[in-house]
Structures are given as C-alpha cells and as structure tokens.
Amino acid sequence: QVQLVESGGGLVQAGGSLRLSCAASGRTFSMGWFRQAPGKEREFVAALTWSTGNTYYADSVKGRFTISRDNAKNTVYLQMNSLKPEDTAVYYCAAGGSQMIATIRQKSGYRPPYWGQGTQVTVSP
Image (cartoon, rainbow, N blue to C red; front, side, top):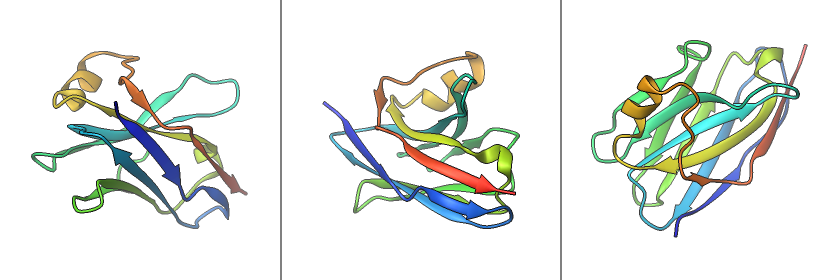
C-alpha cells in the first residue's frame, strides 16, 4: 500500500514562490501533483517518472513550476515560482504506475490510484 504525505503549502503574495513536498512510503513508479480550486474540477499540474526522470507539465504552469525528486528520501517536490492568484487551490500529491505520464496525456480526467491528503496554497493579489 502506498501512502503519500504532503507538506509546504501556505499563503504567498502574487509573484512569490513556494515549494511543496510529498514523501511516499511504499513503492511508486510515477508521482505527480494535481490541484483543485473551489468550485472547479481537480486538474493535473505536473508529473515525474522515477525510473527515467521524465517530467510533464500542464500548459498553465510550464516555465513557472518544476517537479523534482530525491531518490534517497522517496520524495518529490514541486517548486512553484511566479505564483498567480489563479494558482490558489488545494494541491494533491498522487502516485501511479510507470505509464502515468502517458496515461495523463491520453486520457482527460485520468486519476492515479494513490493520493495524499492535500495542502492548501493561497496566492494573494
């Protein structure tokens, strides 16, 4: 069984930065981040494949957010720079199989099997 624990959310002004962390227990092949704003559907943000280091980003965060990993700690990070008020959401860590990135690309609304509890990110104007 995979368990995911997120940390690092908070309140920041527009243009600022935050770094989210997600520590995994149990074996995972891919990990990523999704977010859900009030009244909106949960949406994909970024993902990473452990074995290859391949990454994939939503267009809305490309160039501003970076997903990275620490193999020794079995932890992934989401560095968020140039934050905008529209980035305000609950951010969820997720984990899945080795083809998670390919599946996200192909299937709109795909939901990985494992989820963290979520962490709030609020960006003030």
